[in-house]
Image 1: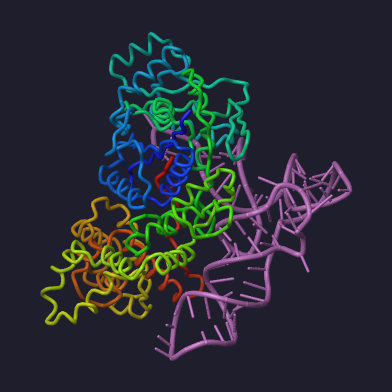
Image 2: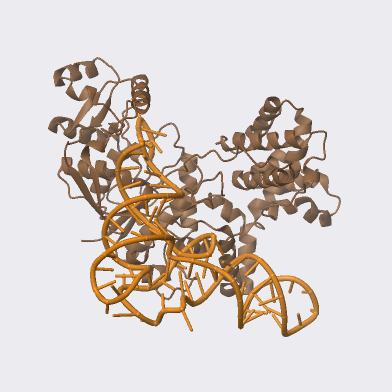
Length: 498
RNA sequence: GCCCCGUUCGUCUAGUGGCCUAGGACAUAGCCCUCUCAAGGCUAAAACACGGGUUCGAUUCCCGUACGGGGUACCA
């Protein structure tokens, strides 16, 4: 049996380092065993999935050297590899479950489900979840209501009084009480499958032998094995990797740490170094040598060498590793070429040129005017950030609000960024012109220069976010005791990568 | 609340019952090298969460506790 693994990102945002981390382990495992590594796009969430995000994720994985054998842009015998294009397949499989009585139509409204959850929580019930009301509906009635156009979802049934035991390659047997498993929705009212259904159907149809994914999926393991059983399929082997963490040990999130691969590229990290560092997360070479190439990782890859404690993603150590790659693996010519490729390339220079041409009288003025385009985090002083008419508190509120607004921008161009800034000025109740001053310093490190929003568009969302957040921290530290940075730490799960 | 997973220096890790006086690395501090700064070299401080078993012997195996994390959606 040929080993087949996959990375199944959902295109709902920037390419996440967590996705690359999971992809890396899948890639290494497949390569090590002479198998194939597939890429599948899990875009069943119509609200949040975008083609731009998908393109960035594919580009980022390629940049890291994690080329897939089958998937979008490559093709393969199991095409299509985009779930939004596999609707017929899921519908047919849902039909099978409906026929066999392993699934039922549910006509409950979102309101009722919300109320149900609230009641269950208030009553302190030990098991939360769907109460099974529609499970007992008569089949004919259901079909009639469905045919009449009443919206419905399809849920899976769950057995009672059973221990569901699943073997995880790293943890051994993991067991669950069947009655604690929710009657999961398999097909949403819009006709799209949920992750649980699509994932099982696709993994089977695509011949996936080993599902290597994040630990966050362990709780839904029983649903998945139940589905394999209902379909009469042999389940793949499961292996759940520990999650990458923030310094406070919570799941890695962009609020607390830059998580976009684009950010690391923009900061001047080498793909070799980033892959190497991700390979050091929860894994080690038998020799314990810290610096290794993707090829070396493949050669020595062994799931048994994975440690289960969730590793904290440490940019400082990544930086040290990157330094080693720069000075040990590039000759001078290659080093120069990489630098050129990084930011001294024609595209980047052409983006910057129109902003500077009217503002210089000699080329030698260029470095000072544009240095922030080639920098990482800046070091604005508290004084420079509050140099305008606004007080520190207002500046704090501006920066906090701006970060939130920026996060919501999908279409990263000057106009939406400008619009966001105007909204923030309104909300905080300051003049737009006054708002501009601290933001300008936070993003460029200087009080004035090239047009701000064009510059931000070029810099990219992550670097802007990181700089503004850094400026916010600078201000927080300068504040009175007890007035530390606040309002920044609301947790939002990063896009999952399964 | 309930379910599941985890726990070696601040951080990444080595360690699969005796080789452990627990090793390496990042970060920190000191020294050396040196035209500056890096890099490099040397040194220092720094960990087996706790309590019970099992065993001649537990960092390593089992149980419990504590702590951390994840899940609990018509998101993945």
